[in-house]
Length: 319
Image (tube, rainbow, N blue to C red; front, side, top):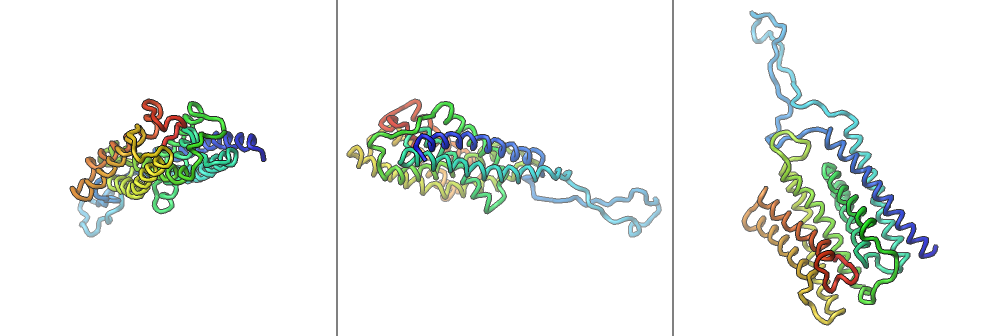
């Protein structure tokens, strides 16, 4: 198969992934909107109340009907759960299409397929969805589905509309095995950070009492576990980037905007983890620190390339 055909197939697969992720987002959103509500208060389940309707006034208590179960919340429609399951199936199919787009792009250009901003964003979306789907295999986190999918849809849509770069060679500095090491670690870590960021946003918007979002404790647990996995990978990516910089430019650190913001992001997530371990920060305070770190990450991945440039801008590599 020719490079042109593979490149065209990759472009079509990205579009297909966008549509599948969009359909999955709708399925997840329907389940979240019409599914079972949860409360942040201690679970009471069903409220048991004595019912004496229709009993004679002089009837003794032991002759009166016993207590009955009164549902605290109406049962959700059966189709709500089905919509979530369909959304999950579509997310898996979309992820396969996303992965196939990256593979065919790599075969077309005969290199690692994240040598420019377009390719990097496509890979970031794959990593974010993968982090969500793998988490779903261990626990039911379909409530994150609408929010992860909207990130993937907007990310791929922006890549196609504004960042698209035709398949082709890259500058010699990027033809290095370091791109497979450094950028791959950054991609996987970023995908996990995106899942944590989605959980953090939901934590802040969740109200008290009944809600179709999970409890704050569950949301914080998901975010923390994702960050615990992502932080070592980001640390490795920063170190690998310094080693690559020494090989390519003859220095480990040059105060390039991408280097600076990668380190700022590392410090912000380190502060979050340190605060949880040493100061015992939990809840809203820890979540705010986590979201500040997430904002640093997003500026590093996108804003630096658009607004600041630097030595990394020659290839629009968001790593």
